[in-house]
Image (cartoon, rainbow over the protein chains, first blue to last red):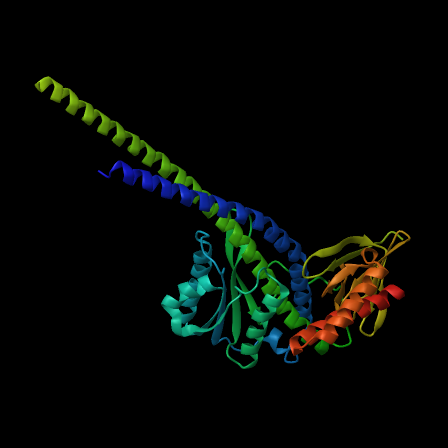
Length: 292
Length: 133
């Protein structure tokens, strides 16, 4: 049985841990509000951009389509972009994303494809390095950015474009977590290259009219597609950020509650031990007096 | 006119406008063009300038710093790089920012800084031109 002093020390240490988790929970809650607002107000742009791309993809067919839309015409080398957070203490948030990506990687490898991995965010890299260290071709560190900004997504977008132009892969898929609510974030896969309309988005019926382009099709597509890429990446970063704070908040909430339970149990045991000690001392005194 | 144009103006950060209007004039790269309901499908590059929204006799001017306009039978969508309502900008503020930006450009000592300052200045100048009209 531990001594009373040991009990006291343990209770004190659990209490200070509880204070930390409580503070982290409140910080995450405050940041969540901002991140959630940013993610939600950015959604219309990403949605509309996706719709415009869907229109164009339906209108432009054949060999004259730019490479980003058409793809490389094969799907041998896959690039898996795994977007995770820079920091931990957020429950299963990163593990969920990595698991979704890993399932895909296993599936692709089984189909005889070649897989390369681009990691955005430290936590995903740490997890994937154990299994696929030789497949990680690049790692982008966003910890230098205080918040999600277009510059951050530009960094990722440029890396993807550069790899694509050097012919390092044929198909790129992005893994991130879509923010649904504080309690639920769903790992999501999004095909970046070749650009494909997301499911559920159908091009509008043009009623027989043909699209006109100003100045011309090729110029528009050339300018639009990199923006589409960056826009989708930015959206994914924002969703991830909001999801991260949501996950961190609920993880810290349950940690605080756990600490509370632990403190209650330890206090009970401490009090019992204290009473047992007193009883023992009393018995010693009484039996000593009786012996006289 | 019973028909209304379904118009949405979005920038990467937020949705600035969404609703039904009478008429929108877009600063296209090949010249300004007006969009009325039932316009033929067009996809155009937008150059920095003032986008004008007409509804019920009123006019709203919004500065867009480049982007794309997409006209479909469903309506008009403008994907702006960056957009700001000109009603929220005062001429004095703009002059002030212009002065700061040109000072930044003069003081810039690296290529990256110079690029950023030049971009900011170009944006502000385009905004001033849009204001003046």
